[in-house]
Image 1 (cartoon, rainbow, N blue to C red):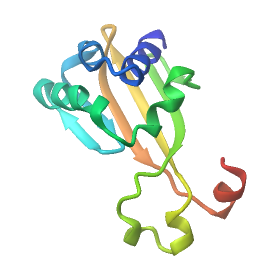
Image 2 (image 1 turned 180 degrees about the vertical axis):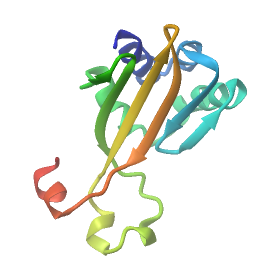
Image 3 (image 1 turned 90 degrees about the horizontal axis):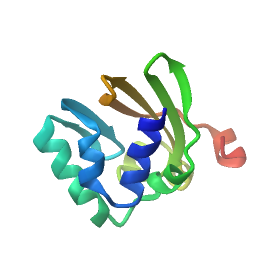
Length: 131
C-alpha cells in the first residue's frame, strides 16, 4: 500500500520521473486520459502530466483513501469531470456533476505492474450525495 501512496504522491507533486520509476518496464498505466502501455509511453505521459491544466484527479492523492482488495491489489475511488465527451453523458445535467472513477493497482515485485482506471456509473444520488 505504501508503494501506491508514494506513486500517487509523486504524481501529485509533479515528480513524473519518480512515478515512472515505480512502474514495471512493460506496465500498463490507466488514467482518466486513457491507457499508456510500455516504458516509453507511460514515461512520456508522466513527464507531461505536470503541465496539464485539469489535474483534479490528483487532489485526493495527497491523502488517498486506498482499499486493499487482495494481496498486492489495491483500489481508490474519486470524483473528477474531464469536461470532454459531453454529448455522451445522456442528459445536460449529467454533464455538470463530477464522474466517479475507480483506479485499481496491481503490485508485483515491489513495482506497479498494472494500473486500471474506469469510469463508474453515476446516478442522481451521486449528484446530491456526492458518493
